[in-house]
Image (cartoon, rainbow, N blue to C red; front, side, top):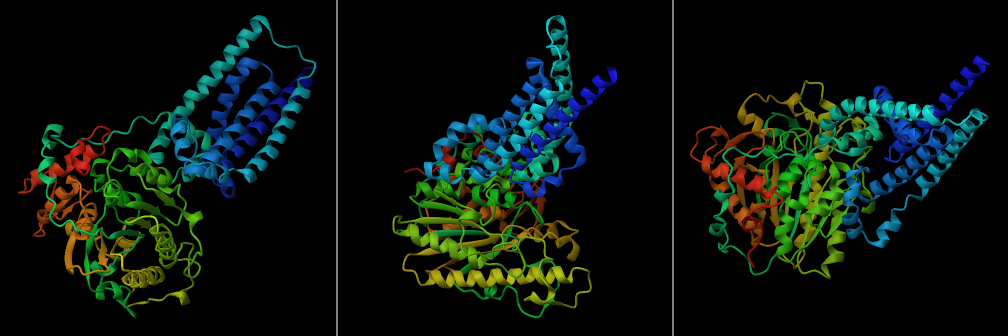
Length: 600
């Protein structure tokens, strides 16, 4: 009899484990990672199963019946998985408890067409089939315990207490890996990537422990120091009568290695860039070397500094509706605004952040047509991205006098070992290192970017409507430290200095701007476009004349090329620290509005 009881217990626990694991797989798959379900780290699989077991124990403390507990638990997991799949399809982020508070806002900005378009029919069908297997497991549990007396009285009280205690202890134990996961969540480029390796249930649990993100307040900050915005508000000189359409392109890994390396190539890879007339050129110093595009993107669009964010990834941690940006400025000037990126909108939380910044329309990978690829590389070519951008521009131009289009490209993203050697368009010579193939593929990508930009300017040169286009790279390639010596402050700056160009289909004064900060590029662009600017941008243009580089990595370079840290005693300290104060203030919910809006 005792042996029979042991067998029953073993069968019951085995069925419960299968049900827990089945629901874990369901939740994982809802993060759009179905093809990578086996990539979760074993230790984290255990953590996720313990977390689900804790929830199961809490439910069991109320029902005290295994098959009923399993039914409630499985139903809850299936509903959660369907909601998660739907939320991810809508805005590229996995569903967490924090999303519940945003539900009303999210539904407000979604139209019925989009809601129907994103209905997870295929995944929903698969989940319901899996749910059927959970029902079978629950039925088998019922068969196993058939004939046993229902727990009641004092025994029931003790069982409930033990189950609650077990669930609570497991929740407490899992809080430690969950808290360790926070640093990954705050820096990773997509929530889905975190869920693949660490598991979706633990990701949800870790988000509970995320406190409000604290932006570093610069030393000596006092809002009273920012009351002089009127000094920068009435300077209207330079504002043109006819405002041009504006195109801003952040080009993935577009960088000129010749800044730091003495590389010889069989064909020039940036010939069009250097020979283009009627253009303003220079190099924009970004936050990072070799990756973390979103940090460059944040500084470009907002002109704020990552110096106040440390290692955090802006779009992952900031409510972008709280900061003014080029979108704010141009919409107040009457521009219709569009943002586009030929990749998953969930990367770096762009779906949500572009919307929060106020872009009227947002386009992501599924919206692009006629994908063009370079050989076996998996990223859309600049040429194809520009064709889509132009098509959207032409279709909206009939209804809008002024258009601002922002595009983040993907063509030059690593790695650089995707193509066969014979597909290279550029070949290095006199190089004896181990990265020859990578260099050839990377420089071939840069050449394709150079050609595509030339073709883009040729298209718009035939337009009667004035158009100004700015293109800038987001960072150097990830192997830059392997092919160049970077062992001085100046080289650190140059390793972050990506090429930029401002071209117009009307006459502008050609100029070499040298090296400036990427956070000062939009103020420069709007100044050259003759567009009315918020005082914040006017301040930055004034600062650029004296201090062209205010780096997020703690370095400042003045117009004479002298390099300082923020804390050095320099002639421009007050000017630089005031910029830090303004950048900090622009990130607050309650900012000094006079700096960050136009005065109409």
